[in-house]
Image (cartoon, rainbow over all chains, first blue to last red; front, top):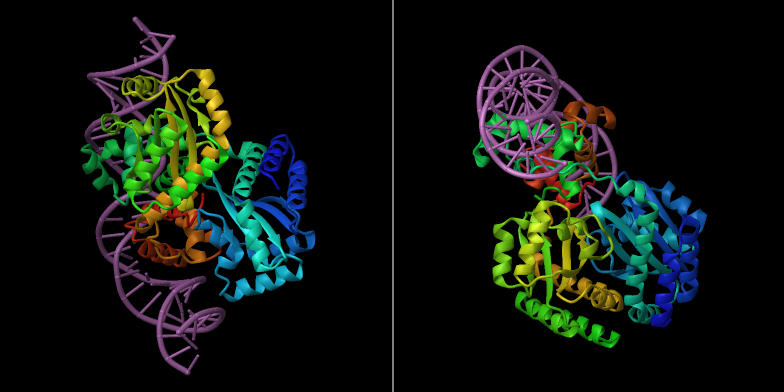
Length: 238
Length: 238
DNA sequence: AGGTCCCTCACCATAAATGGCGAAGGAGAA
DNA sequence: TTCTCCTTCGCCATTTATGGTGAGGGACCT
């Protein structure tokens, strides 16, 4: 596939407005790259999944039923990586992983695979995958040749998914004041209120006011919750 | 700059082995793209900054001294975005932001800028920026033509930075067990111990064991600290 | 000039978290 | 098989956090 075709594909993608069109895009990418499967899936904060691709419904059901998500070396491996990864580079040594791979191959998935980790705001984590049955060398050649295209395509894909799930992601909470941020930061670093107050050179009572106001702004039920939200919001950094 | 040059640049980048070489890479990119400044900076999990680029030391010192980090619309705006952003699209309406921009321009930075958010494992967040003084139309043209190159270059850059900071970043804190993760997740969501225990259908005493063991694994001083670390590690998501 | 938000401090009773200790069955790895 | 780690539970004294309310001075915006 030429660079121009990769660009065309991204244009096509950018016009998608529904999940169904994203679904069709995975099929187009599969055909264009001449691989068995193309899959995008996004694991969100509450363990729900948003995805589409060319896997058979049987395999998807199987995957969900067996709760492979938390044993899948692809998901786990990509989570700690920045670069795309060839499935063969992953750690398949655990029992659950080998079992899953066998199961996948029985469903026409693999053994070759190339998965690209994608990360978005607020800890979004998604994986874009190509899977195929060809031999090691052919697979290597294909991936090396298309690596950069694939990265761009996967990002275009994720961008679309983010757009479609906009509602989930655009919830901005109130801005914390500098003192509130400092307070939560110190608490997030393990200080108790007395220590944090001393650090900021204010009374513990004053510090408590900041914690309370931060809690209310963030809609948090307690200090730990407030710290978690402030972190997730990026309002503080630990 | 041709696509081939973009590829060359990535090859060059991939050979860098020190921070100084990354520094020189920003200069090379600046010259190649004919812009005033190229900057990469990464705000890491302990609030430290790792960055390099072509900004003057005066401006960097000023930036740090005035604590612009938390008022910088570029940093904040990119944090909530997936796509690269032109500075003109950002919200400069706050007083602090306008002040910063004026200050930046006094130091030869801006008013045009193009910043690419980059995210890596464990909530890594970095920004790759091009800044320049040319007019809106010229800037727009440059960015549109080079957008895809820049995304790839910025990723190659970040990949290198991750490699160089491996020590900092690969400090894998001990893996939490599933129960420990669930426990911390529930606490991070604002549950108190009684509620979390009920949710997991275990006794509060048992739950406490998970909190304690998680605390010890994470080297945390209290529950809030543990939750903050687990979040920063990406071991839990809220 | 008045409103809003930020920073600062105080008091008090109650609810919740903490720090250790001990114990036992089960799964998985070496 | 032995050993480690996970999961589950119990107890107790002590420290800490929480939820309200009240109040004054200062900065900034309209």
